[in-house]
Length: 295
Image (cartoon, rainbow, N blue to C red; front, side, top):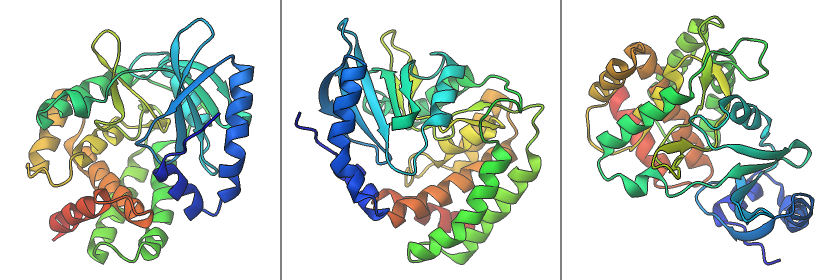
């Protein structure tokens, strides 16, 4: 088997000091192929926290095999996919959490390649998010929005320093203020299943022409958490992000202030992280927008 590991995955693994995982990966893929009776196809590029390859099941059904990189627990993703049960997200066909492996429904092209108008993409992303959201209680073993906000607040200052301070201190302070507000606003009674990273490359076309999401983080949070990632989308597009926020709020009935807070959080965290791993120009574009808004 000639397994091709995409450069972005390889860079992420090496940056985290886990080169040995790259050597072991072909054997892991081969053992999963035997256990699940898979025919292995080409690797898919685009992501950086998992190896994703096209596979074919023994009955000829096309699917996707996903293996998380070290430090990437796919357990919450598997839980989210089970809860969604094919509604709004790709269907989960199999899982092996001991090897951080998921077997998933194979979908088509990403929304970014099929829908030219950014505003139309934002509407479609909003609609697929609404299809995913469903009430879940605190007994479901998924991180809460409050937990996520607390983790991000702990992580951001250190990550910002490690990345070489790629945005202004005021921008970091603004994001930390937003994180505090969203942590305090979390309410288990109204939390829903959210994706956590909705954008045009994570929305793929299904066989019926609709769109389904891939790569859910798997969270119990307020719906604004998902809408904030749509506000983060398309850095440098030039539209008024306040207007975009109000449009999403009007479309869903979700509080605009909460959406704006999560948009700021996702913009700054994603930008700083992207700069730390050399994922450019995405990181610089996000942080330039963040600095402009803070200024």
